[in-house]
Every structure is written in C-alpha cells, then in structure tokens.
Length: 291
Ligand code: FES
Ligand SMILES: [Fe+2]
Image (tube, rainbow, N blue to C red; front, side, top):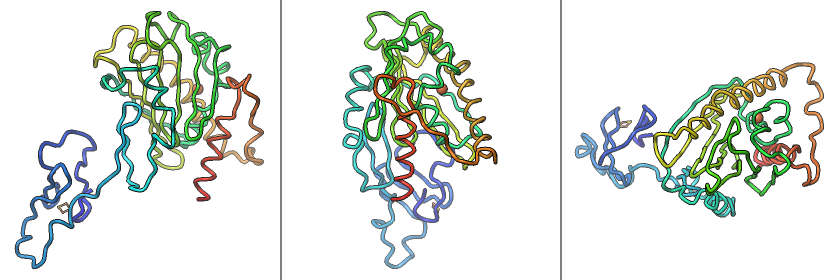
C-alpha cells in the first residue's frame, strides 16, 4: 500500500511494474527500490522530506525455488527454521529454479483453512477417500515424517497409473509432499521437473481460498503433465473438497460436543496411516495462539 493515505499500489493484485510505481490515488511515484520520487505540491510544503516517505521494506528470501515475502523484518530465515527442506526439494527437482508457471487452479471452499491443512497432514483417509491415489502409490513404502516447521510424505509411485505417467529415468519417481507451516505445501511429483505449489488463504473462519500452482519446464504441459493436472483437478481435489466442507459442517454440530476424538498417533512403522502430522500442526497452532 501507499505510505501516503494507504491506497493499494497494485489494486488489481498482480502484474509487472515498469521503472516507476505510481499510486492510483494522488500519483505519488516510487522507484523500484521503494524510494519516493515525485509528490505533487511537495515543493510548497516547508520541510517536506521525501527520504522518510518511501515504501516500507519487506523481507524476501529465496527458498525451494520460490521467493517468500515476510512483513516481519525480524523473522528468522526459512533456511534456518526449515533446515533440510530446500535440499530435499532440490535433490528431487534439481532444476527447480528453471521451472515456469504452467497452470493455476483456484478453489473457494466452505471450510476453515486449518481443516484443509489437517486433511493434507494425514493419509489415513486415503484408503477411503482417494482410491485412485492409493492405486498410484505403493502405499507400503509411504512414510510421513514431522521435522519441525515442515513435514514430509513420500511414497514410491506406479507409472501408468491414474495419477502419474513418467519416464523411468526421471530424476524423481516418488510422490513427495511437503507441508510448510502454516499454509503452504510443496509437492514434487513424479517426472522431470513437476512441481506443485499449493497454498491456502483464509478468507474468514468458514471460508478458504486454495491455489494450486503447477510449475514445469515449459509453460505448455506435456500429455503426462496434463494427466497429472487432470488428476488433481477432476479427482483428488473434488474428493478432498467434499471432505473438508463436511468436516466444517460437522464441527458446528451440537452433536460434536466433546471436541475432537482421539488422534491415531502411532509409531513410525504405520506413519502412512497415522495422525501425528495433524497432532503436530494443531499443537503449533495452539503454541502460536498462546505466544
Ligand atoms: S494514497 Fe497514494 S498518493 Fe495518496
Ligand atoms: Fe485427501
């Protein structure tokens, strides 16, 4: 937003600035470095100092092939908080920096964002809700590990299944799904440079907007990549959408009077069907609220 009277500098929400950013309200203009360049009538204001009226700096960090923006200038770097995640993503997707946006799907859901994250953080429901997914992944290899502010869910896949088709010499043949606190998931899907960045924005307590962004080597997906997108769009997303919206209605029922039932937190051997990820996330939410 503009430091003058707070009009948004890019009300349309996206796009590319040229050399100058001009506020649509009173045309204060700023360089791309954030410095205030021109203010109409400033020369008639005694003591007006352009140096103190530039754009607020924000923290940016390159991580896992993406640029993260943080308005908290004192935040600790993600590279430190989620040590290991960057290396894991790059090991599975060595050319992550070269990928380009290829497809974006956006959904509005009648569910709280935390219900959507809970759903991502366990595959206990995969057997009942996602029959094609459990056929496409060798579920006996599926492991779900919690590592501080991120988790990893990794399983070997079957090429030629409903969800995935790829060359056997592709750099990554696993389904590798990482959640990063609080609302981002990074998904390295089988194939060469198939990266899905899925994230949830809370709109209000009962509504979440979820974006699915697919990054590939080329902006035009291959036939195999179209199959992958179709699987997410037409199978997996509708399956999870009906779950999270049902849970949101159920949470409001007076019948759910004792709060949550026991979570299935087991040992590592059954991490594929455990709810330790959900427990971990819910504890992080409680800690954040108490802080
Ligand atoms: S609010 Fe931006 S120029 Fe006035
Ligand atoms: Fe699911």
